[in-house]
Length: 328
Image 1: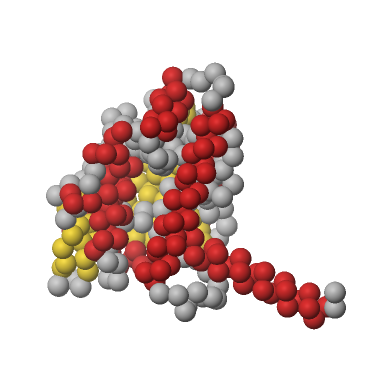
Image 2: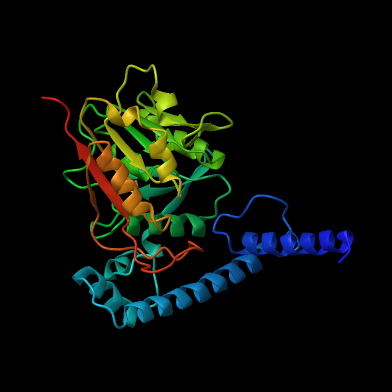
């Protein structure tokens, strides 16, 4: 095939691929918008249909995989749930406790921002976020942090204490920090998405003396909008006592850039998500134990079928809680 035709067909394949990724992406994708001609409402319908189809396919693969295998009690509970229900990220009955109608959304005319009630506090959202998306987002967060959820960050034993400095990596709406703001001495909220910066500052306005919103991606490199925790906290008098990491699949990179922070002599605790990538759980657990932490998984499993690389055994632990006592 002549080079010109190869280039043409290669460009067409790339355009189709990018169009598909933009269509099914949960948050959209970077690059040219090849679907600008398509109404947003139609995009949402097609996206929902795609993920409905994919969920059904993954459910069948899971049931087939475990059909003739010996299972643990936790695996048996999940497979029993899937036998009678459609696939969900959280394959448990507790998800039924949360309804969209329970989420109350209002508008702050002074700030020009929508907000939802979150445990008696105002949780602000971006200016352009519709009320139905806010309700769906907060419902999802309430499900994630149910006491029975594999994604629940805090327990009585693993929580920030009075006087603690907290680093919230991937703060997004800020619900984790809002849960602990009264106890903590100081909070650093790291969030790379610009659309969340204004809402975060509005949500934490009552605590502006001790809450810092850091508009940066946390990774193992520095520069171009990215920082490692080691670089950020180097030279500061403060020590990090509690670390929460929910970095959308970049958790291992966050740990790689936090070796100095995580090898100080004071006591430290934290939680880190392990469900975004297939092998994150064992890799992250091994790294934390090498750093001297006691590390344990949360109970139960998640089925993160949004990962295009999901494979056997399909069920993933939601997060790891870790702790280490300092001298004395």
